[in-house]
Amino acid sequence: MLHCPQCDREMVEVVAKAAPGSLIQLDQCDKCGGIWCDKWELFPVDGDEADRLDPLDENLLRDSSRVQKKTLYCPRCADELALLADPILPKDIQLCRCRHCDGLWLNRGQFRRYKEYQKSTRLKKMSGEKIAAKLPEVYANPKSWVMTGTKGIFAYPRGAEEDEELVGKSLAGAAKLVLQSLARMILGI
Ligand SMILES: [Zn+2]
Ligand SMILES: [Zn+2]
Image 1: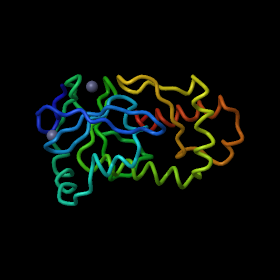
Image 2: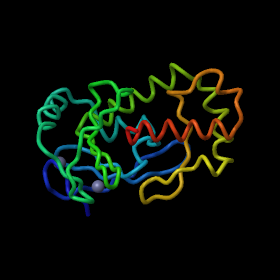
Image 3: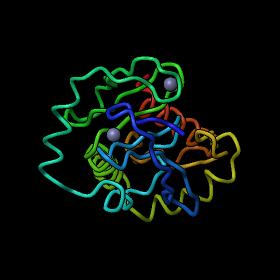
Image 4: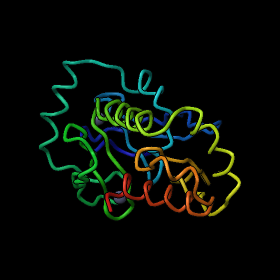
């Protein structure tokens, strides 16, 4: 059982829907509401899960920015977590990353912000029909699959960094770009 980096109490396992048709197990602190995502787990979780896992509460959101200053340690490796500094992320999204296991800690409110950002960038760059059209292609190509934490293989095309001309490119190229975007987004590289 993992311990909350903020409160040091045992976290509970929560199962979140991931699009399309997969489940991902996250760890959440039932005191502070923070969420721990192992490597690759954050990106594919369905954005609608934010309402359930990370309900909007302005008072707690203000709290979460205050506790952010504390030094936090990875619940898996006990290494110090570092704020993920990715220029493509809006400044109000603060993800704490473990450089050893690439897990991410999200204070309460951050999961929702991240998912809203993810949703807005995807909708801006890519229509729903295009996303739906791409899904079976990406799934058909094993090269586009990535490991999600301890939960096996998962694939998901990201719309944010993709532009219109990508649609016309080869499947291999598309899958590669998807993986690069994923890596950039989640690992900050
Ligand atoms: Zn906690
Ligand atoms: Zn770690």
